[in-house]
Image (cartoon, rainbow, N blue to C red; front, side, top):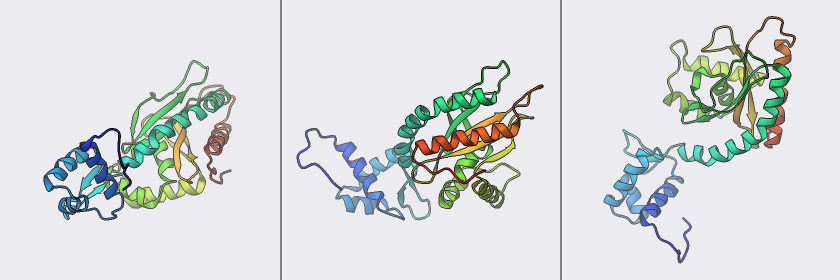
Length: 258
């Protein structure tokens, strides 16, 4: 662990907490409390207090069988959340305005946060009749088209971890959700009936970043109006084009979709 030789300011408690985080970041199976104390040349009492705070804040978790402490994914989320949101919303806002005007449909931008889907952007068309999702809304991971298309472009290990933490809907099992995620990955988008509003069909497309993972998703909760001149297929194509442009702006390669 790198440390400054002569720090201008000292915060011993903070340093102990950071030492634990840095130590655990190198351990695949975690460490027990006594192992951490020995590695950091600290007393067990000091380490216990730090671990309790880190655990209560969600940075570490203790395995109930082995008593080993390991880092959670929380630090990963923090490291990517704010910069991603800032970049995403800045890049997405004008594109989202364009696609809502072109399709006369609402569009929202969502990311994965705290094992849920968080809506970080929302644009509405100029018409009188709209369907929108509240900005800042948190939605159940497995019952959101945004969540499904994001996880379709995450690793199998990440999906496994979330399956352990977030219960599936009553009519789902692990095999079924994995099959559907594989289909989404193959297609590059998802079209399905809304989980919450009857008669609404969701079109959801991933936003791919430079690493090849889905950083976010654009979702259009499509509503059918009498006398609508813009077809559903036109809406699908326009949303896919918008997501592809946004992915490229983030340095990502859009999935090969038609």
